[in-house]
Image 1 (tube, rainbow, N blue to C red):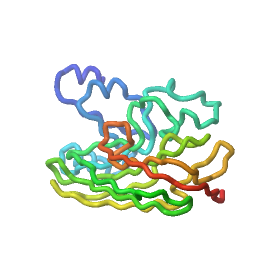
Image 2: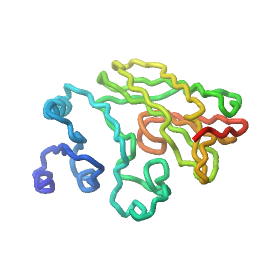
Image 3: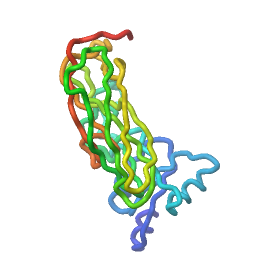
Image 4: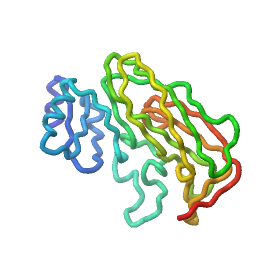
Length: 230
């Protein structure tokens, strides 16, 4: 039915109502927009109508990865984390974890990180400027991802903070994060939580790094190693 409706030549918005990720590969290539409503409850119709009409400017983010198909995942019987979730998946998903669009656009600048190494166990202050560079007022979800030194078991990246801010057209706001020792830690291959010595990368933006989302990145160094309680 979706193919027939799309073939009519009119603009098509696909509204999904589902409880988990779907491989909507054909829809991504052929419809004009996709709105993910999940299971929205009794006011879901109102929320969908207000979003489609533009009365509501959406700012939701995907809480899971949308894969192109089960062929992108390891066998179900394999309990290893390699290749699973946005933290260990190395391929190109249909839609990444943390993905979401708006009726306006946002840009990021002036990422601030400590210029000197921090000791393992110290907190890390992070600042970034977010600007509504589009033509509509709206909310932006600022996501902070951390990448770790090359330690066996370390994820490729991990979400370590997010904040939702409302910005009028042309407005800018400085957003601050404070990463504690647990935020800076990872779990080794042996199952031990640790803050590892070495170089880290911070990426802050409207989604994951290395995706179309606007992101600014920087690096810092941790001096020393600290094991944390499990």
